[in-house]
Every structure is written in structure tokens, then in C-alpha cells.
Length: 324
Image 1: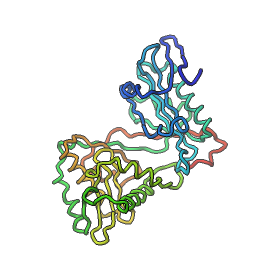
Image 2: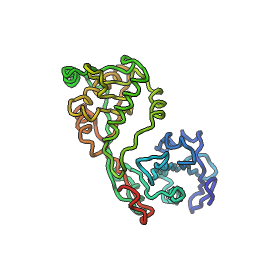
Image 3: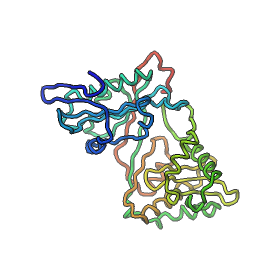
């Protein structure tokens, strides 16, 4: 089969696989999947993106996206390809998943990758676990997604956390109030990188800092009134940040952990989100991130089914080249 517009036949239906097109987004969303846009910003040099369609129709029944995490260099995940693969329930067991999987392995070998990484939701009826286990994947780590109903959240119930950091000489302000400048951006970049460097992940090498130019481009797309800063009043040091109001990153400088800064920032973040009419807040935490899991439980987040990350070595002779 060719990589694009290839055909597969089964006793029940005909299918074809082609490259993803921007017009496919709605169909992918309807499938229950989503496009990880940043995976594809470097094009085919670092990613593979395909969809499976039923017969000659435009109905999307399968979605595959793969990213070579060794690009760009230097990388914290050299030799790893991350992927997501989904097939519509009523079209499973017809060879679609197997065909898409064969394509992702071929892509990984072409990229000289040594390890495949993906994740699935841990539920009783999830067939992904069987699909992956039958292909040699093993569990590596878990993530815990959680949600909070902001309609019932009352910031006053947790205001003691805000008052606690204020009594330590730490103020909570927005980045807009702080005032934008190159110096402030550099300080915030250093804070975020310090916090990210100690995030718990398994199977990765030493932390590789984000290029400042890339961080700055992403930062300038944020709403400065929605970025919350914790600043030590004496030296004006930036010690904590929440990067937005939805799917944000909560960061505390490692030297300032254990003082309740992250909790206070999240309370202020949730207060602001509620004031802006946001009804639901979502987040996800690594199983080893005990501190943030405890904070989210305290603030009323309800935890859903864990997400299980799995890995497979596809070049056993080079297993030493990848941290596992």
C-alpha cells in the first residue's frame, strides 16, 4: 500500500487511508480524538498525520498522529516517537487499526527511533489496553485527569491559602499589573524553566530547556490579564506563576516550594475564571506529582479514569540509547 490514498478491503467494508487535511478537523473531533497541533508544526520532517475513511465517503473512521520527540535537537526524549491512534467503535476489528499501526512503526524506523510511547484511559471497556499489549507495549506511568465545577466553587472557602502567602510578603498579581518588559519576560522564562526542570516524568533524560525564542513567541499569545504571578515583595523576585485560566501550567520556583504558593495561585486563578463565566476547569497531573494532586483534591477537583502511558522498544539492540 502507498502512504496516501491506499485501499484496504474486508468482508464488510472498504476503507482508504490518506494524509490528514485541515478540513478533517471536525471529523477527527467527532471521532473523539483531537489534533495535537504542535506535534505537526515541523511538518513531515518530524511527524506523520493520517486518517482512515469509510469507502468512497468522507466519513473519518480512524485517526493517527505520530511525533518524533527527538526533534528539534537537543531533546529530552531522543529516540522516542509519541503517537495517538483511534478507530471508531463500529469499524474496529476490520484491520484499520492494524494498518495505521504498521504505518506508525514504519515511520518510527525511518526516523531511527528506538521507542514508541502512547497512552489510553484506564476503563473496563477500553480495548486499547488489549491492542497495545498484543503488540508488545508495557505500562510506564499514569496521569490523573480531574475537573472542577466552578459554578459551585466558592473562593472564600479557600481564601486562607491566599492570606497565608500574603503574610509571608508575597503578592499575587497579574502579568498585566506587573508590566511587560524584556527583563520581566526573562525572569518569568527562568521561573517556568526552573519549575519544569523538576517535573516528575519517567523514561526521559535530563531536562532540556525550552529555547527562549520559542517560549517568548508562545508567551506573547497569552492574555496578560489571565497570567497570575506570585512575587516576593522585598527583592521583587518572581516565585510562582499560573500561565492561564484553562489548561494552564502552575509553577513554583523549587526554592520556594512548600509555602502554599501554588495553592494560593490556583485559588486566584479559579476565582478569576469563575468571574469571567468559565464554568468548568480541567487539569491533569502525573502520578508522582503528590503535591499538586493534594492541592487539586483540596480545591474540589474530581478525578476521572487514570490515563496509562505505555512504551514499546522497537530496537532492542539499542535499548541502552533510551532512558526507560
